[in-house]
Length: 98
Image (tube, rainbow, N blue to C red; front, side):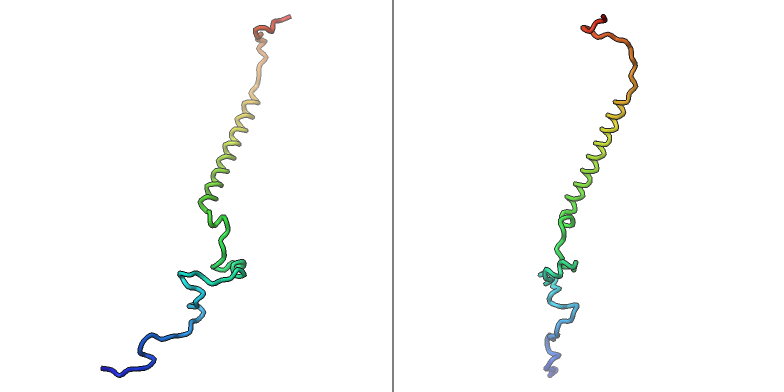
């Protein structure tokens, strides 16, 4: 048996360095303040578009589809309006020639 006693016997308690500080705890999050959040640090609050990326993407796609459909209807109306007309001298009933 060994008679080792002292600091090598059990866990050592070292002071945390910059990369293992208690502010960067993986479960409880970073201890950043609101001033840090404004500067874009990792603990910063995400904006609306980053939190709702699926909803934002769907809305953009729907707006593009609605714009394309509206453009097609406008173009079709313009094409039908510009159809050349021929004066066929057709009388409609009740109008009569005088």
